[in-house]
Image 1 (spheres, rainbow, N blue to C red):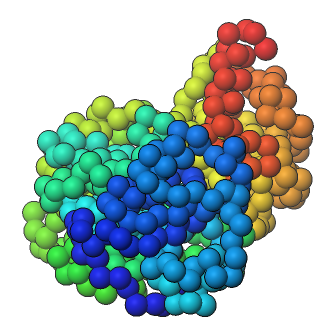
Image 2 (cartoon, helix red, strand yellow):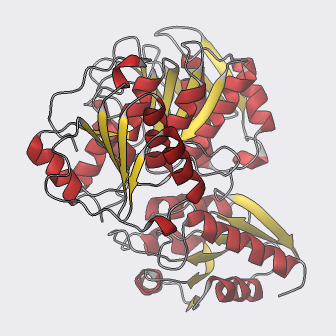
Length: 487
């Protein structure tokens, strides 16, 4: 969503223009507190608002905001005139446009920015940004490791959830400030809302399918939010898009100037096209029209990158990294050393010949279909599915995965609807569990040597867990408890 107001004139890498600026920040989560602390240290008059009580917030982060000189109001007792003396409102990704502070800013013509828009102006580092419905964490992580392998000073930030690398764009922008540095970002559609001048040097869309329809009125609105990543790019920038994906083809119409690099598993790109493709035993690429072909990787890929969808992730990451200057040799080295990202097709246990795979990050139907297809290549699949609803239909779930499943166990709010879809498509071995623990125990009883037990919820986690990491961590612990014979 774009507030439509005149933008503040704050150039990239600027420090002085923030001094004395009156900034309200809505949302005291990780991104909101990072922005509040950073801008307060630059001399802005910062007030941080949150609807939760202060006791429910991260005490260490709140203390850092106060130490930098920022004010905090939580719970926020916001009045209609709360924005009257404000120059800028910065909103956290999860905040609805219907929030009373957002509505006040819109009425008063106050500019509304995202954390991404602020952080973009705090650094002069080059930016490689990845969005998409599925695969964006793996692509961002791969691209970062490829750049590091090539010797670049690179940071990984944004929507990345792995604890080992978790940091906001704002946090990265404070430490990676110079033009020779590179910040690799994973960005959700929520983070791209209220971006106005943000223009990454390289922008990637992995795929765009229906998701978050509890937030967006239509699929078109969701696609439009993703397309904002490309809207401000120039002719010196690069856009990496999935040629096989209908959503990416829609986004292509909104890429006004950047050079487009395609990746595809379905065909060999014509000589005039730039991008990457899959051949019988390798992945190849071309970086200039009618240019020389470049060898990227042998097939099959390493075990940590099993599955057809991982071929797409590798191509997307490699094209993005090479657009930043990485060499094919650095890309090959990064692929050879790659380890799975937690909660994304993560092998967590092997007991009595049964593999246990944690794919808790699988929060929509398309991700579930892809992950079950990948697991099926390893053996018969027992799937644990279900969670919090996101407005998605499960009509296509059953027909797409039933031929690949030995059994399914459903949990959570969406469990009954998923079970109905699976049974309608002909799967008889469908049962429900009241808890994840019971689901894992049931799956272990059903599985035999050579089978795969996979957590692929196809739904959000908030009905039973604090987040998808919590869900995946509990699954990992349960699987290892079974493997240790302690269940």
